[in-house]
Amino acid sequence: MSLLNAVKHTPTFRFREAFSVMGAHTRPADTRTTEQLLENIEYFAEYSPEVAQLKNELKSMNPKHLGLVSDICELSNTQEMINTDINMKKLVVNGKSLFAALIEKLPKASKDNPEALNFAQEVINQTDSIASKYFLASSINVFDHPEVSRHLSATRPFVKDIARQTLRGMYLMDYSKEKKFVDCIAGLINPTVKPEKIELIQKLAKVAHEIPGENVLYIDRFVRSNTPIKQVEENLEVVPQVAEMFAKEGKKLDIVDFVNNNTNLY
Image 1 (tube, one colour):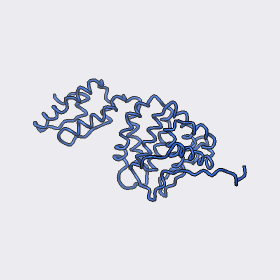
Image 2 (cartoon, helix red, strand yellow):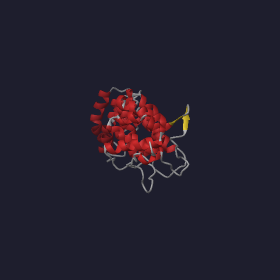
Image 3 (tube, one colour):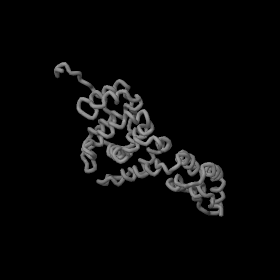
Image 4 (tube, rainbow, N blue to C red):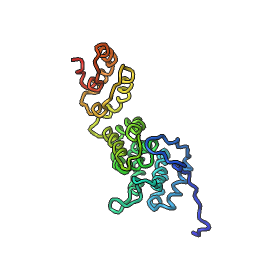
């Protein structure tokens, strides 16, 4: 085809801020239309062999996930002028880049493991580019494991809070904060954890907020307990009364220990 007759595709980018915010922050809502996102795929296919090879498969994905495709393409083309920038197009395993490996997984995962794509989108929505890239690099295998989809669904509402707790503070010139962020997520989506426990975290936090004192929640200890879900729910119901009793006696209530074991009374 003559270059004079080639179609010029005009992308609608999402990450072209004048100032790149670092750490945890909520990106503006993605308001791009399906047509704009399909146009983006056409645009990236012109410059990325990885996209060109799978263009038809990518365009046929659930429209809900086209924004993630575009975001990953855009992230792969961003460069931060800091020591911890991650080059997603660098060859890493068997002559394949992180970008290529991700693009290959997305069409199948959109059908078989959509919650993994929803979760990855939430991470991108709530973190800076470096944390987003670090998550994608360290958690790429999650797209291949639909058996943890309920874990991902239960954990997704906490991504924003986890990001704020782990990515705050000044730039450290290493990946220690990003690793802490990913490790916290990994602790919840571990197959050994019951997703029902993750789903109870919001109720646990609500109870802790409503009772007297500063109540520290040891989430890892909570979700890894073998206490039956029914027993945990029953214990949660009586926490307010127990906390009131402890406050009158000048004692401190370990909420997690109580709902897991109901031993604080003895």
